[in-house]
Length: 358
Image (cartoon, rainbow, N blue to C red):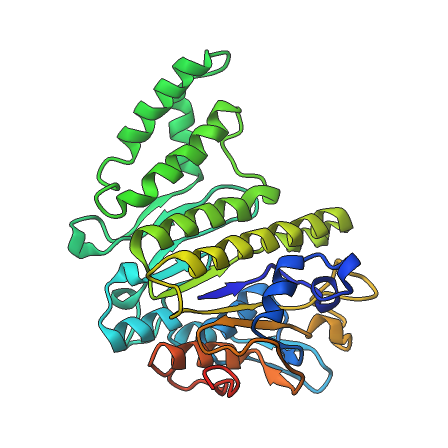
């Protein structure tokens, strides 16, 4: 399992002294596993591109002579993802590769949609969840629940004031009608999806605000892990990017919330018979954040805080109490995950982390 810990998190905020650490659960997890303190992103510190580095093991951006970032999105999207390579190599069904908040497929001619994963997306400002199931189950390959769909459901529920009981009854009928044909694909995900939407509608707030988006993602991811037992799962949290508002308290609260979600995921991996003793958990960040201005992670590129990452490896193949200070690259994470899964990412630029699995 690979967890992207937030959208731009500073190393020192996560691994500070105990009394000022924003992620005490992750700090304890690092003590029981292997902590990489020399993990770096030496290329674009954008969330979308850095996430693709974690999925493909390939940098699609370079720095010019002036230290400015250059980006080639097509080159990045052409590289197959962990999901595609894993499924093509192993023959695993779609539900065995969970992509929570990350792209699951590329434009590579040998991969693409036939090898994508079970996906649902997360948006910072509003619910935009898409659930894909295995076509062999008889469902539609890709069904989306976007803001327009929510708007239709809201219109059916009726304007306020409506009694909570009537509103709940109307909501359940509206959702059942709107999701007709979806449930056969991934029925285990429908209850939590409906419950989350019901809570929003009953509170006259059908959209998930940025502060709650990672909670939504964690709930769906945990349900998917318990229901489908995927062998590959990538979960991408993002709310620390609220730092762009310039509000330290929002950023700190987001980091603390993700720390709790990581702890919940780890407890599941420790207690579930399917995962216990055979699962490697990798927790890393997509990019850092400025020291002089913590609301920035894109520039100035000279500030090393933007590029400094961390990686915690815990579980199967990770030795407890080990700290690796030698410099490593962000693209090494995907290559390592692929090796653990018994496959290899084509044209990857990274190298497997020798300390994991040894």
